[in-house]
Image (tube, rainbow, N blue to C red; front, side, top):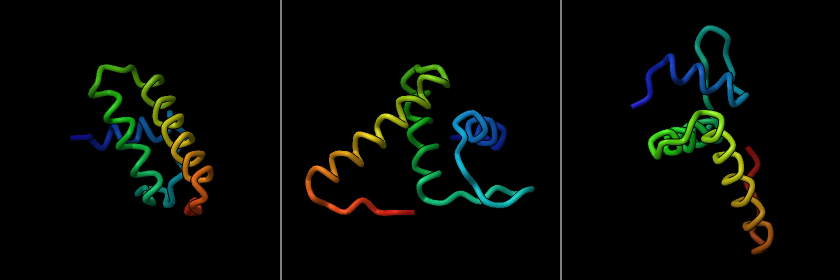
Length: 75
């Protein structure tokens, strides 16, 4: 449910790192971020709020993993 134009725009706005020039290549971390942004947009958040919510969610999850003694995977 995400158009190519939306994906490019969100990637630029959220400063999501990708590989490739003409054709973006997304790693799993980038895909997860875009999915979180999409969920925020679906819930009625504007783009900047959805991007911030995605970042906050990922930071809190990483902190919880470190607190629980689990290793945080490095991508």
